[in-house]
Amino acid sequence: MNSQNKDKKNNPVPLVSIIVPMYNVENYIEECLDSILLQNHKNLEIIVVNDGSPDSCGKIADEYAMKDSRVHVIHQENKGVSAARNHGLEIATGDFIVFIDADDWVSADHVSYLLKIYKKTGADLCFSTSLFSQKDEEQNRRDKIRIITPQSATALLLSPKVVVGSYNKLYHKNLLLGKGLRFSEELFSGEGLCFITNAAQHAESVGIGNRKTYYYRRNVASSATTKFNVKMYTNNEYSLDLIKKNLIKSNDEVLLMHDLFMVHLCISGLMALYQNSAVKEYPQELKRWKEKIRAIAPKLLFSGKVSVKSKIRIIGALTVPKVWALLAKKKRERIFNNSVDKFADGDREALP
Image (cartoon, rainbow, N blue to C red; front, side):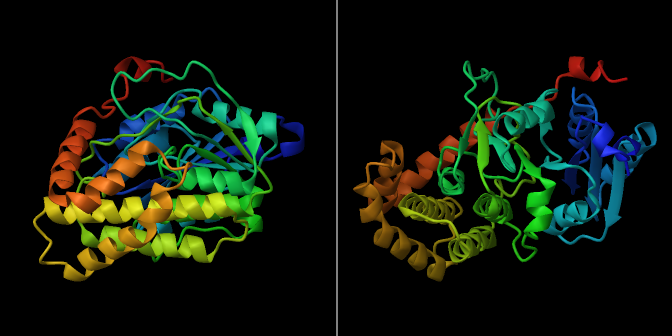
């Protein structure tokens, strides 16, 4: 697709394919694409996959493609975000793959920073453990780039220390193609976690840093994280079951973090039932989630690797679930109201 990629041997600057799945994001897609076009790493192939969106984001993306030859827009019937990302992977020609969600945006050094991690570690999966998600957040003062094992990476991705998602990461194309790694199209929630842990499991090594270059928007009204849907939680459960089933490089820490993630998910499901007065509507889910929490809780509460914050959340959910649900609702509202909000207009002025 990109003429700059005709002779990779004579071109020391790698081609990076950026895949942007798109659905109902007409209010955000311009900010996202503007931030990508401003990357200081210019050798890009930007693949925007319109997943049958009913709004005007497809038209907006087409206009960008007319202005910049690096932008390629694919229009498909609505099949879900996993199918959209997979479609992008099928046609990507870059040396590396980066995913960016269409309602988020990135700093100008997002791609170059991820490539910096790769150059320092040589790892086929690289990511930053940090991103911007709240207003007025400061950049991390120290950037520590290091290489870790697939097991340590899997445990880290399952831990509360990292925001879940396929974004904020750089994948060597040989890793994804060589291992046949794709997003599970039966998952509409938890698909990102399933994909990144699978990638970590198949990687030779993983490089990580902690510079913030990705802006993760938490106040999108249509987001799956802001609307109650019991199937979102059950699909996440299924995702976690798939992750455990497909582990090929595991250890005690991986299994502990998997249990911790499952308990946090069950607690979130319980809280959502109470917050939406849906306890009587979903008795089976209520019972199953409580049983899972009670079964796993002792192991977590007595582990020195589980944070005090997580332990307090487990105890609160088990002992005073209604009160904890109210506190959780207020916390979510604070996060929503304080979310990163807008790509700076001053940055757009730098566009050619």
